Image 1: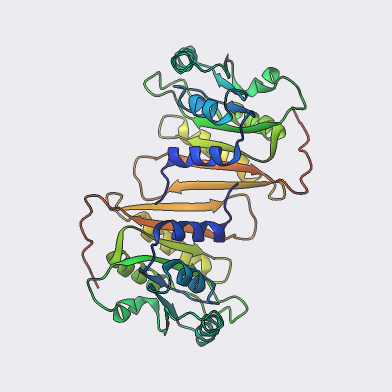
Image 2: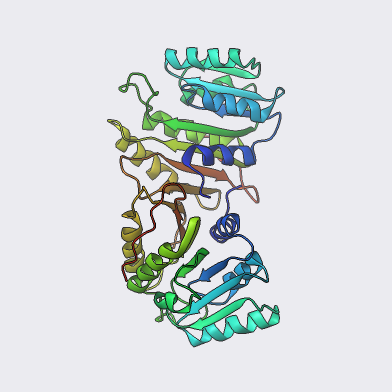
Length: 198
Length: 198
């Protein structure tokens, strides 16, 4: 049976992230992916959960409290500044997830932005462990969504095939701009660490 | 880790086809998928393997002999006539695979054709079991390949989302027209059998 989008995103993350790793929820939103990642890395792992919206921060904090999660840092800042929050500059990140678009049941004019998304992707690729994945769920039905989608696609399509596999997973017979997945895998063999350019 | 194209095609088929079922290799080519399907359905299952090229038929026949496979019918005819070879008109097919393009190490001018591919897809959708899959691996770098790709994509994109999930799985940062997968899942719940229109 074909995995739906959300199920496939979790399947990919679960298949590559290991216990005790540090991972990133670049857009914590309602906190569901944060909670999922918290379970995957276990109590000695660490989730860095970013959002620019106060409402997302509060919702995620409450969800973590309800689930007694101690391994999550909830960070009210843009994911483009993520390196400020990593304990060391040499650490490896086990994986990351993005949900592009707006916060459900919230102000639809506050949306993720292609420039900061691309900057955060590049930074995470630098810290990502070999064979690690960045999973990006792209919602684009809202105003400004198509522009972000096109800019992000253009960026990831030019990532070197020597260093990365970039997969698109999408249902192509659905109406109303259904979300799709971009998954970026950092190759493990013979990979030269990407030069940090920020 | 992300599945490569061939690995993912087999993963999908294996996850939905069950022992003892009848399945279809619509383009047997060098016989590798035929052999794979033969193993998946087991000795009481049945594989119908089609090809229009004599060379493909011979290669596949030899591979089946070498592997002592008794559960394969190798059929030198176009997949668009597949209903002629089904034991009954009421039977259910467990799954099907297509490899679109030309036979490797062979005459590149003999290629699969969009019209017969689409006709065969429609016929298999009629006989496919609920929750069954048609997996199509699309090679399109050869002359005529782009036209077939576009025609097949256009066709599957208009399949009703009430009756089918149509997935595209493709690597988007690779050069030289890499193959991609289209997977069509026939929905299982509340599905009305598709009217046969051939």
